[in-house]
Length: 408
Image (cartoon, rainbow, N blue to C red):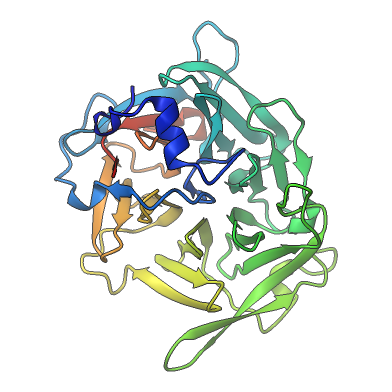
């Protein structure tokens, strides 16, 4: 059911009104990573209700603590059928995810961070009412698919967090086409990807203590005007600091396939980022997290500058730790998931506020992954990668419903 705040509009009118910028489109404002990605441009009349969240209530029957007005359900558990009458079982260690428009309904895609060629990605299909109508695999035979990113033309880029040989696979959320490897995006310990819809440049994070911040500039665009991922230039960031700002220059990676040296060692002037995690694009800005030092960064391609907007060491209060997946909601607020910490999903408001949207009790050995909003903004999907036991075979995927937004 559509949120009561939007009850005056039919579901179709609501989706068309709020997302008229697109024709065929990815609808997740995130990604997460171990991310999420915001490649959309919703109209300016989205108003967030998250700036006035009340305290979190006691945990519900699913162990989820939420503010008043919000509710939670479990939609999938690892190794169990998503739909009891069908054979397909949900994957191991659910990680990064995104939502995609599918007619009057939508599809939620999630990675599997399983090792030794047993990873991949799966999808859950919803109808217009939010009921689950199908579930299936969209990628198999890969390793440690941690996060990734959505493209504005409706595909999912699934990333392997696999030492110095991790790859990127472009997947069809509907499961109609076979996934395609995209070697031009480089071989390294991939974490997440964000697509800049203004410049058609992709930005990538690397989950290493000395990992780097990359971008991919395609050689050409497709006939539809999007980045052609078959070939292009992979570059790495070099940050130069002065008393005013941190400027960013980009250095070409000569060997993206890392045949001799890992990409992060190919230029000594490139700047290390301690454990790159989730990354997202929204309104001309790239935001990403580094778990090694608990920071959230924002890069401005237009100004070629980068800054820290959250640092646990100096934050008051320092309630966000183990920063991991990040997404930007329709109103431009940052939502950051914790790996460990207090197992919270934290909101960083545009005014500088910081508060928990939800937390999971009894799952301290897990991490929150894959946050993504449904097309109408009334539902939020995410996973507990290792559930109560701390093992990937006990992952849980949730749906939270509530008044996240109003529309004026």
